[in-house]
Amino acid sequence: MSKALKSLALIFVLLTVIFSVMYLCIRIKLFLSLAITFGTTAYHFCMRLIIGLTLNSAMKNKADYTRKWYRIKPWEKKLYKAIKVKKWKNRMPTYNKSFFDITKHNWDEIAQASCQAEIVHEIIVVFSFLPIVLSIWFGDFPVFLITSIVAALFDLLFVIMQRYNRPRILRMIGLKNSDRIRNIA
Image (cartoon, rainbow, N blue to C red; front, side, top):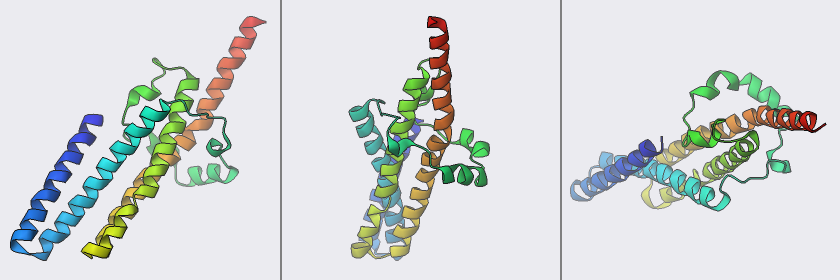
């Protein structure tokens, strides 16, 4: 998945350059709209890669899953049931599946990776709205607004997925710890 994201980011950057040059040469409004659309999309892809790689480098999947921020609120369970997270969560793409591979990591490490992934996507949601500022100079506010909302909603799905899975992961940690206690006794 990481190769696909990097390739798409590059493609959208190239399309932005192509349509920007075409607009500068021919001054057709459609080319400006396409340059803005591809530029905003390129931003979203590049920003995701930069934020993900930066946090991975800084945190190294060592988030403290016991912190209050990561605790599931009672109302979340109702929301997750209403939007049927269980049905769609396994169809979502994963940037690096090895972070969540139970053959390579224990449940404690997977819980930490889950928290880091949540933080990455929460930061991305906030940064998804930054391109709206460009509408001041380029106009086409609706293009910036729509791409920002769609991008933010997409990343909210990943936040929801991580938060939905976390109680199950924490139960597995509890089960493993209780097994260790039984083996010691």
